[in-house]
Amino acid sequence: MKKIAFTIALASGFVIAQEEQKPIDPCGSPQEFYSKEMLDKCYKNYFDAIVESKKLAEDTSKKINDIEGRLKKLENSADDQERRIRALEDIQANVLRKIEELGQYKWQLEEVGVVYFDFDKFNIKPSEAKKLEVMLERLREDNREILVVGFADKRGSSRYNFNLSTWRAQTVASYLARKGIDIGRIRIASYGKEVAELLGSKHAQQRAVRVYLIK
Image 1 (cartoon, one colour):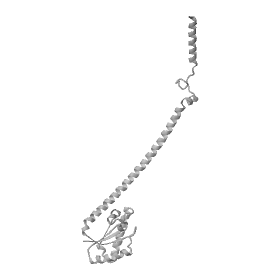
Image 2 (cartoon, one colour):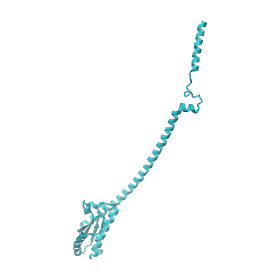
Image 3 (cartoon, rainbow, N blue to C red):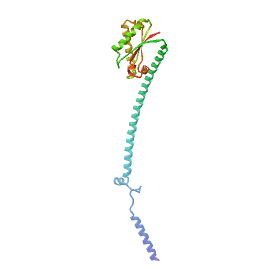
Image 4 (cartoon, rainbow, N blue to C red):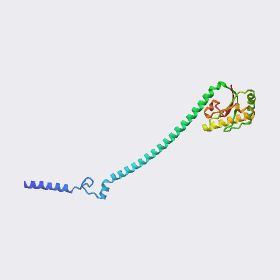
């Protein structure tokens, strides 16, 4: 009996001694005191992940700021385009109003002739001056008022083409006046690129001045 008890006690002591000799996991015990070496050993992966996350957050923040900056530029550009569209719509509305006004008096107009101009020019070519000489005969025979209307083709800006149309009409009106037509009889009108296709599909047909007698 004593031998059995001694054997059990010896076995128990061996188990206890074996348990006491089992190495402790330093990374698994929250009660351990960690040196920098132990922290690096146990939590290096966590620290690396934190650093990487911080870097990723900073990169993301930069990208967000960049996107916001680009969006702001696009918004400004969109506002710019909207202002331009509104300006063009105003010009178009004005032109359409003039066309409508001219259309109201179309039945009162008798076309005498038309002269054509070179691209971006408002001087009268010799070949077109001959046409004006023929028109002068008709205009001298009639004492009604004369309407001289300038046009331009579709190329170029609306503002520039409107001015070019006006210069062409003024050039023809001056030519008629120099040839003896009473300047008090002459009225001038001009239209820009918006109505160019009404004169024809070719640019050469659109660069014109039409002369009318007002009935």
